[in-house]
Image 1: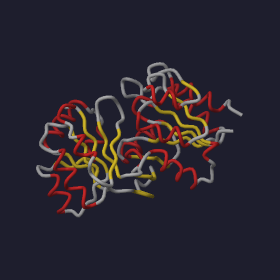
Image 2 (image 1 turned 90 degrees about the vertical axis):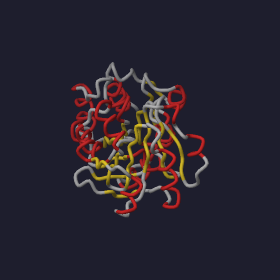
Image 3 (image 1 turned 120 degrees about the vertical axis):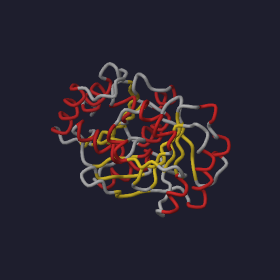
Image 4 (image 1 turned 135 degrees about the vertical axis):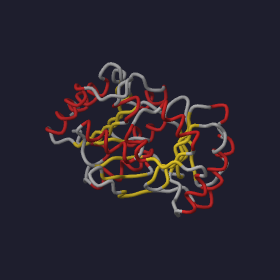
Length: 267
């Protein structure tokens, strides 16, 4: 019997227009009425997770920043957070900045953007909750040091030939992953959605074999491998589909609504 369902956001809960459909909201409500916890597990910020969780009608806890944060949507509190080692943070930022890469720098409870990224993201990432929470700094490294902020995650996009992936992979205490076929994410070593979802389930006293997870991308693999009922989206990458026990329709055809209702039918 499924008691908890974790949903990825981009490419999963959100349709191609970046919206949560009425059918998906209805399926989430149906699951919660049946006593099943439904949570978000996303690479996005705490602020965005709280906003989308409220829109979707999910429960109050979320896995954010690819597993680097377990947050309370009602208060914005970080119940648990893992940061990139301090001695690596500056080097990681030096490698990523000034390359015309669209960067999201997640620093503890803050989002920091350099001017190039702010200008680019204003066109490519139309989510007001993100932009309202972000701080723009001419020198993000100096900003983090001045405000004594940790580096929690770096997300890079837009200019793939400029990505310093080889150099980043050689840093200790970090791992590289991705949420689609054109970005990269740098997170603390050992951090992933599966580990943090396991902590969330433990807090609620729910065994992982009574959990389901739905995802589409490489950074969803650990989450799918952690639960008893892994479900891939029809638009998911091949590795995710290979790890799943069921493949739902894609996110343009109510895949999440299907996945939730299918999971509810499992013994």
